[in-house]
Each structure stands twice: as structure tokens, then as C-alpha cells.
Length: 361
Image (cartoon, rainbow, N blue to C red):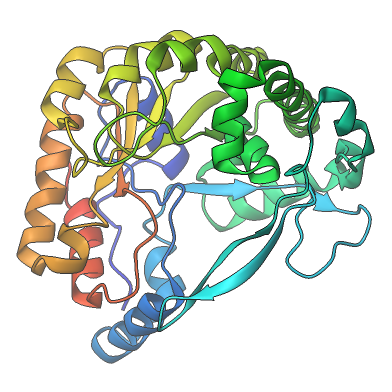
């Protein structure tokens, strides 16, 4: 049987909004933002749940997850196999039991000047039908009233997906006019896109997911002054637009980003997502004590260490510790730090959700 939620007194949406307002609820909200379960791990979890509880993965998770996503309908030009709206082409690369889709073609890889960008086929919000959004939200809330999130405003990442990561980093220093020309077009697209998403259902979309990985395992991917000067202003523009529509900004970054958190707050984010505490200097106690009055947090259960390699008790202990520290006084949504990887024991995945649903302070 799926886990009982009879002790719960609030809807998922109420629970999430209380967390974002730094108030405690009947339990800490649970979400899988910028997450999921890789196919091999999902197949193992499916088999485990059917054998032990007689339910599917979806039937188990649905009563627990407090944030769902909504999107418009794509009606634009046909895309080639593996191609996205930006012209980036990905191809599967095996990791043994499954595959990741890795970038195979960078459409702006040969650009030399801003004028070269004119030849690229840039996407348009007109490629989407936004009129379907209200009906999709009604359908989601007919199942259960949960917080609704729109995705996916990753400005620097979208830019380097087209250009190439190393080229884009070099452009920021050696060809700033080219880098800014790309970032300008990407930002203008996302501002227009989210304006139409949020206008389609006023007051009904609670969160907009934005992202750009700023850190690696041991530090920032670029100097803080370079990020402040080149990338942060574009996110501030997007965040201002989102706030003008009454929605909150949930921002994803992996890695060791403690030094960047004050700048992220100044940039206008409401909730910091991922919380990769296995990265250097990422301390949940310091994060809460220094920034918990201004930021909410989502994620934090390690998909690098505890979930794949710990015991179910280790996982439960980590979840309860995250809730104890980050959930004090509200402001925390518990979940995995990123996608649950192949090889993760299904017992550990269940332990995470069971500890989370019993985690009221």
C-alpha cells in the first residue's frame, strides 16, 4: 500500500508556500526539483515496491511529492532526433546500465563575432501554445493541490550548450562582446517565454525554476567578480520579471558555491536548490545560520554518497539531520540533491521518503 498521509492537515501547496515564507507546517515539504530517478534505479525501485508494498513507483510517490511542474505545448517547427529548440543536438552515451544524452553538436561553436549569430535559427515563444496551461494546472490540482512550478531558465548553461563550455568561458574574458550577445538573446527569450507562461495563469504558478551551475566539487567554476560582472545581471533581469508576476524563484546550482550565496540573494532568488553538501565548504549549519532568514532551501540528501553507498539507516539519519538544521523555523523543502543514480539501492530511496514524511519538527 502507498504510505498513509492521514496525519497531514495541509495541502502540498500550502506546505510549500509556508516553507517559502519561513514558517513550519504539518511536515516539511517533499519535492524532487531538478531530480528524478535514472531508469535502472527506477526499475529496481519499481520491483522493490511491488514486492514489498504492492504499488508502483508512481503510486508510492504521488501522495508524497508537494511540487509538480507545468509547461506549454510545443507547436513549433519539427526538430531532428536529439535536437532541442536551440539547435543543440545530443546523442546517448552509455554508462553501462543506461545512457546519458551528451552534446554532440554545438550550433554556435564556430561563431567568431556577434554578427555570426544572425545566421542561427533562434527559438521563439511563438513555438509554444500557452493556452493549455490553465487546463493543465486544473488537472494537476484535481489530483491533489500541490505547488506548481514552471521551468527552466538556465541562462549561462543554455548559452554554453550552443557555444561549448570551454569556448564560452574563454569568450567571457577574451570575446566579451560575443559572450554578451549570446547571453542577451538567451535572456530575452526566457523573459518573453516566462512572461507568457505566467500571464496564462495569473497567480496559479508558485515557482519558476532557474539554474546555472556555478561550482564544481572544490570551488567556483569562475571567479566571483567575473560571475558578478557577466552572468548575474542577466539573472537579475529574469528574476525581476518573475517576481513582477507574483511567483518565486527557485535557483539550482551544484557544487561548492558558499562564496556565491550572498550574490545569489542579491540577484533575487527565493530558494536555493541542490545543496551538494559533499562539495568542499558546503556546510548546512553555516548555510542556515548565515542565510536562512533570506533564503529557503530545497534538496540536500546526497546522491553522491549517502543514497548510493549508505545504509537505509544512514539515509534516514541524514534526512532527519537536514530537516533538523535546515527546517528549523521553516524554509526547507527536503529532497535528493539531484537525480538518483543507477545502482542506488531501492531500500535507500524508500528510507529517504519515509524519513521525510515523518519529519515534522
